Length: 227
Image 1 (cartoon, rainbow, N blue to C red):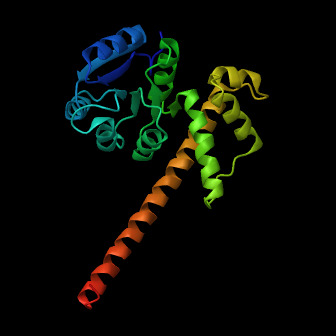
Image 2: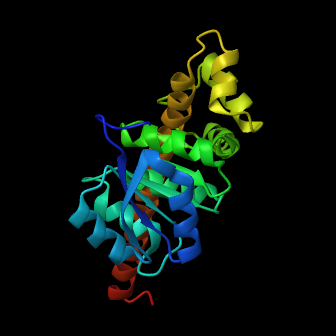
Image 3: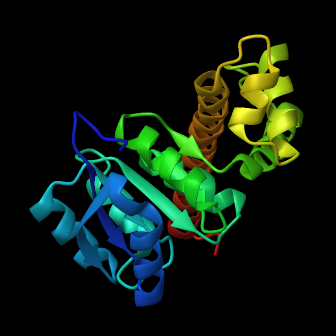
């Protein structure tokens, strides 16, 4: 049995569909102990703070603010992994920027889900491999719009992302690489996601600042009688 510190991993599961919660509970098996469930964001936050699990697993789209509200409330206290059907680049980067340790698709195979959640409970960022294609597209966008390039992709990183973007698993890519390290492959993808998310936060902050400056200038012109 896979455990954290010699025991089953304690998990709170949040999803507004009971059938999904039941399915996740069955998929997790004996390596995990579901210590609480919730059907909305406020319930997930309350349950997690009461039970203090090793990991919170939540859907992105739920009543009461959804998975984003859960991540924003709990990320500083507990590891939160979002399990969703959304393959949206914006959703992925937003939840990572908010502090989620993982973003997994509901189409993830049961054995891959268990392995990913075990790593997340131990502090490792985890993401569905197929989402790497979104990262490649975003990196290209940043390169053409003047991204700061604070984390330029190495040859190894480009190779890893290219393989993962084709749908190959972390294990397949890791075994085929010269290092043979699955953990290194997952870490590479996580590092790139974190960098892109950070860049997006900076961009949004600059946009909001520009908007505020424009609004202030407009108010000044109104006061001066231009409008």
